[in-house]
Length: 296
Image (cartoon, rainbow, N blue to C red; front, top):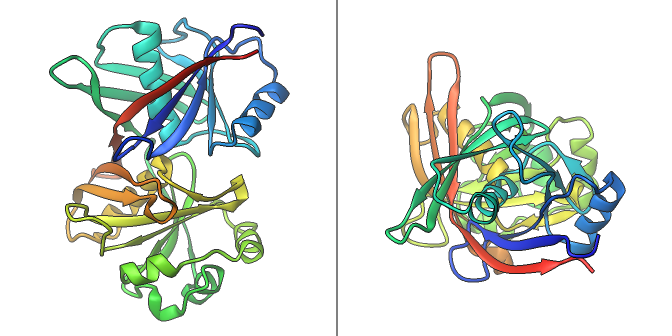
């Protein structure tokens, strides 16, 4: 194991040392499941990824994603962060696209570069979304320590998934978003009957001028009480917004702020549009290289 390299990156960072941090381990094919799980717990980030080989397989790179508690099939910021590390440290030159072979399937990530050839924005095309169960507003209000009137009754509380399901909760304003606080036992009891194991709340009022929505994500089930920036959840949100025409039309191109309540301000870019029988979802943002290390 000595000399195995890993990188620390911040994904969706709005400023230095913000966004959602990620550890990316390279050439990890020789690691067993238990070692990957232990390293993810040791890192104590929301996710840690393992690039199994520096060689492409079937047009993509095999990658596994672990939270401190479990392996998961897909997550947004690990997908973008790992693609950035692959492009800069394995490929070593600007490319239009890197594909990751994940448990959920093949996820393509495209790159937009600045004038100096540095990846400025990365975009991932998520799987076609699936709408799930609708949850009673009164039930989710008790889980989030809110009152029913804090929840927008013009739109449903509903599960959506583009690979990892989340329960989407429309709130009326920023005041409601700020006071949301999860009752962990009630949340775990609720998600036991759902495909979604985590909750995204959003508000049309924002933390910062220029943003279109404000978001908070609670993922106690995965060992993350509150996540600073969640690409998979925001992909689900994008699908929800278009499905219900929340912003008044069949397509969106918006900026979302997340992580403000926990001091990790993040900026996520969402694009989605309705097709004949589905919704096309892209989630984008920046990735900042923070550090390089080696296992002892």
